[in-house]
Length: 107
Image (cartoon, rainbow, N blue to C red; front, side, top):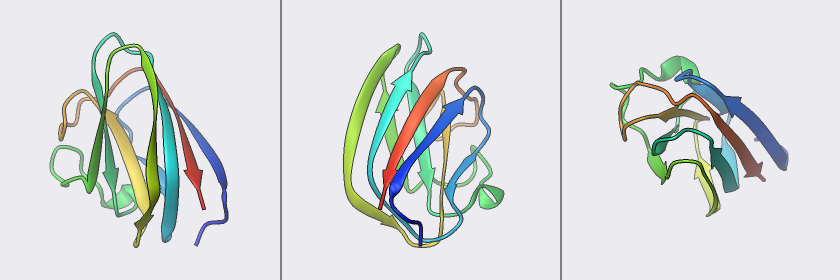
């Protein structure tokens, strides 16, 4: 299990990113979408190697408007296997965004 802290990701494409390859509890997320269009964060309860964007069904989806920053309290959401994510232009698609900064607060 991961130790507490803040993890930062600068995302510029549709590459799936690992938050943790082990069980992890996420307290919250702060996300800045610098794109001129709405974006979606797809969260998966598996590591990035097990995700095929557009095929693998996300366990959680968060939507953020264009050129916006927001935060979400996930109330210590537990990802039992691992945690990975991707920023995409549709809810379950595979086309990526071009400019997002994300912070995960983990326990």
